[in-house]
Length: 296
Image 1 (cartoon, rainbow, N blue to C red):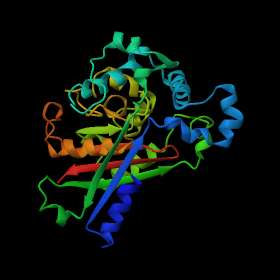
Image 2: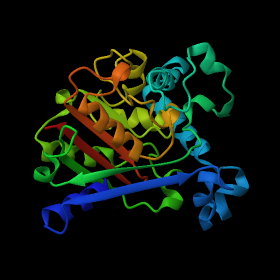
Image 3: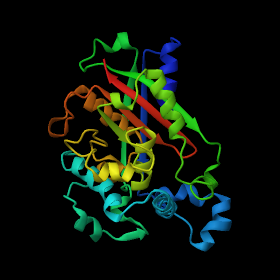
């Protein structure tokens, strides 16, 4: 969200006509994605000695608290990863394409109750990039113009050391604020969307961001997925390339790229019919972005 907004501001200020935004990650490096948190003094001093360390553990506590607040069965939680796997099965470039029903979900190892391997994002070495252009410059290019209708960014002011573990409500991200800003800027609301891409580091983070985008009511995210609304053929497709949990974990950028591809209408078996408006939710931790993209 920040990168897209900076590119937009640069173009509007006349500083550029085309801005390249690249991103890459090597999750298989020693320490992987855990290395960032391992360097935080509070975690090293207070949390790690008690075994409270690692993103699956953090998000498992969120899932348990969410289930306590709103209710959530195993099958409802599993429906998130099953939904994204159904989309990945239609995506040739996805990392995990094997069919997954509830039995297959239960066969994946438990990592931190209630999260299984299937509830966690993938380990990926990969990269991506997109180009943001002035609209008049883009009209001569070979693809349909996909316009940035709205960008919202919310902040909660918690440092990363306490963000996922010590907040009063660990599953409450600044997504409500970012979504409100983005919808207002675009002049649309959730019922206008044709599809969405949601940062799915874990099933629980996808559930609450689905609610924050307004795709369902608060506390109804798990049941929204269990009802099949986000699956291929559902009324509100979500993470149509398999997302981070089945498609590949190149954080955030692969969701934005998939949104653009869907809005261009060129995605074959996984194409959402008449896709014209898409929301992209990006969880940055103590910040959160919502982007509204539209086919021009």
